[in-house]
Length: 148
Image (tube, rainbow, N blue to C red; front, side):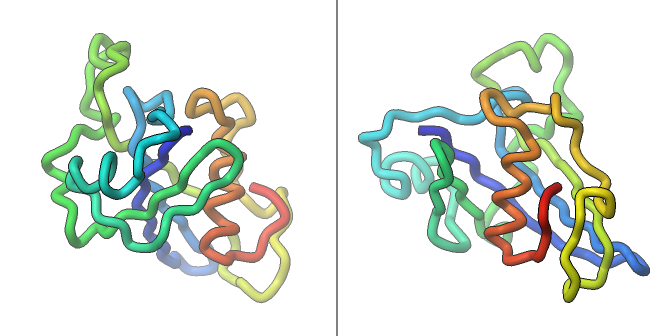
């Protein structure tokens, strides 16, 4: 199974709403993979200092884990932007990678693909396309949309 710990923040700038996702990745390009037999909280998250904000949700082969940011010291972790090219090729380096999804501020109407600034179809968090990840995250946070 793949594990995707994430932090979420929503803000509004004029007529635009900005969804900020900080995703814990391997070298900024891969999802974290663990054996299916491990217990998510007891064996994986808690020993690594990750406290859940809500119950994890499984979608396909990815377990989405929203973390409690108030109980997480982000300075203890690398961010994708600060890693060198050599470090980014190291499959053992975990880092936070930030993505933004933009859309209209009117949450009462359906959002079409043309209204959003989409992530390119080729952008992956190996093995999953980022668009699939954001589609599910938006659904998790109960935001109306048709696609991102």
